[in-house]
Length: 143
Length: 109
Image (cartoon, rainbow over all chains, first blue to last red; front, side):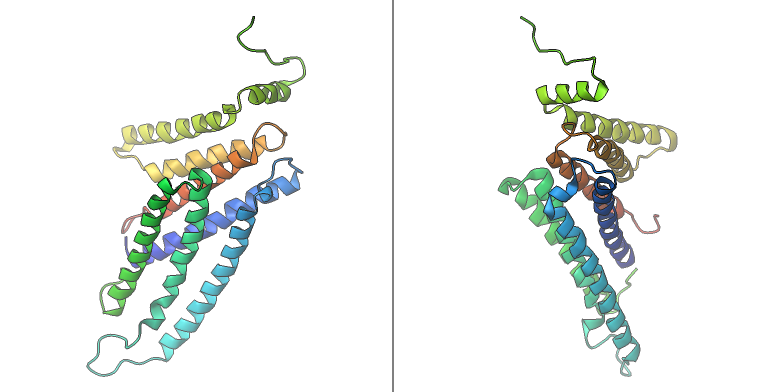
């Protein structure tokens, strides 16, 4: 899985999450369902937080793209002086962390026995993101 | 003495289900698990038999969405499903989606 697949996978997960939560909540509103997911405020807040985070991600990407287009590489240098242009990817694991923490707390509860599984998975995703940034910055193949 | 009190079968299928679920609260989650299992395992076995490999993340998403579809229909009648069960189904669907979207290899769509 390359960097582009990684970013696309995370972004699709975020959009999928927003779509599923919005659909279930709006289904209950439209049909006056007595059982509504809106009763659980965690889902509503996660959906609105993700919408805001996606907007922030877009603005960060715009600003870093502008910085990249205005930058230059010195003669003899084959890499950028700063990894700032790649730092937008850092906000993606943060959004995934929100999604996974809600999913794990809903499925497994707040049992510490399962908490270590979530911690390991979230840390692994963060490490993958950092490795992709480092690999791309040093001039490797970003895939 | 009967082993259990039979539900009232003359007031409609939904009342029968509500009475059954009030007697056996684990009926709804186990029914949704059954639907998920049929789609997940059935799809994987059928796909493996046809093309030689099975795409487990894809069938997990399809099984989850099948369960979710039935779960949100059950929300239209009070007593058929609890909001906690609906939350678990939604959360499991999202986790399946995460598995599906991050399981694609290079050159794989």
